[in-house]
Amino acid sequence: MAKTDIDISASHLPSPVIPSLRMGIDCLRRGEQLAAMAHFEALLRRARQHPNHADEAVALSYYGLALAMHSPQRREAVGLCERAAQVEFFNPDLYLNLARVYMVHGERNRAYEAVRRGLTLRPAHTGLREALRDIGKRRLPVVWFLPRRHALNVLLGRWRNRLFPC
Image (cartoon, rainbow, N blue to C red):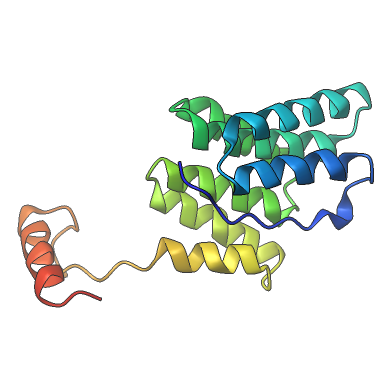
């Protein structure tokens, strides 16, 4: 995968964790997923040695994001991010990572739901707002009384998008 823009609001994390987290995030920004995974693994080990659910959840979430960007191990990456969001369900950054993992794997609906959950926690979160904009908004089906996946809607929708792109 290419480089990505990743924000971090680490005010809720203890100071020994922040340098490893920042180094891992910097690696992700540069597109160096393997190096980022190494930083997040170290962070995860440290969090498990000194039990702190918040640190472990953050480490799991970012490790899952790096894994999703590096390899096709979709289930594992999604599982890590979902578990992190369940443990620290009040941390909007973890919902942002979950949405990014869903987007990497082309699951817009699930990404949208993760972003909406994060925005209920912190409506002014800039990363979540940008993710919501990136996910986009679907147009209504051309033939509104037929299901979206009906062949006629698919055909007419493609035709409409060629003639009238948004």
